[in-house]
Length: 109
Image (cartoon, rainbow, N blue to C red; front, side, top):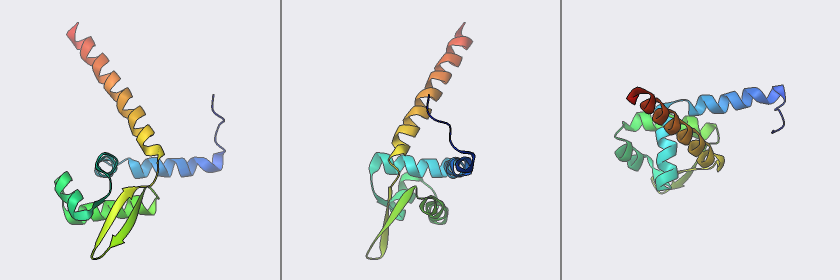
């Protein structure tokens, strides 16, 4: 069993989950993990969302250290900087799929 976190670290953990606790931000992270580095315009198109909305969420993700911003000319390109997010997303998504599948089996009975 992993060592328990010191109580002073729990607020940092909670903040990371708050940052990730938004569907739009999760969509951005997922898209960047799947498609690699993207600029705001590309994310707007891929996510079918407004530019201001995507920019606002990218700012939150950047401030939290989840994504990094690389300026190039008049554009900025974003990528995921936290390698643990791929594993975290995989764990959560796998578990949710298992739960949905179990619920579907229960309804079929």
